[in-house]
Length: 400
Image (cartoon, rainbow, N blue to C red; front, side, top):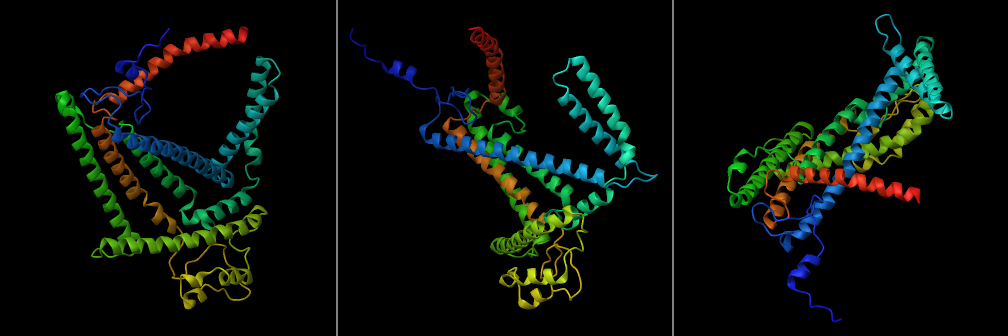
């Protein structure tokens, strides 16, 4: 039989369904835009998807580091807390820690026993762990106090404001990355009351103007935060030009990056001493410190006179914490750079708004204020209807 000629309508129906930047199937926007959007917007939609994937990965990375820093801060602080009549924080932490460890061990070791026996063993282990807390309330306090002191006052974390300072900056990164991601998906916080009352034909141009205005505000705020940081942290002057402020910030950040690399090397040197219980602030003799300074390459960024001021007299000792030859304290020095999360994050959100305006202009994003909600409802409905079928197929496959 001769094959029928395909009509234009048939070709259109067989064409793969395109997807929007947020992963949902493309459909005609409520404002009458073309199905799938204009061809010139497809590279932008693909770029939007890659940007979203990158941000999701960054958010996951930052979240894991934030959780790790908070857990480390609580654990080291609890184990380093000295028992006293005025505070039982260390004892409470040790009781809780013992209950978690013993309870988890009992649950894992009794996995082959009956569920009633397993529960009873776990509960008994938790009770024992709670009761043993006061018995070891002073064990290892000096050791963990030295470890805490090193993390806070003699390591790379010292440059970042300690474990707590690191957690604070990671929280800010998480918030701004989340804001950028929400903007890209059209789920940012916005007032759409006027847009809902506009005719469908007018929604698209108004939404584009709205996105561009938001981008301008975010870009202005981004420069405002950077300008403040340049004056406050990098010793720039208010009357300096934008280029001068950028150059000044870049120079200071270069110094901080150099000191960070040197401190990371010192940490690898200090870690074995600290783990052995040696005092973090006095294990390094002057001979080793002076040799480290001489071979450290400080002369490439500071004068010989400034570098010579870092030397320690023979017979003395020095904390294994990097020192800036210009006399500035290095404690919390990286906080100045980490505070750039504000201008960087706001600039990313501004670019997100510009990109969303272009996607809306090309028809790859809808101007409907409820588009994001509709997509979520449709996806939830699809998952709820597909789940029973998938379960039946799984059961049928298992039975065969």
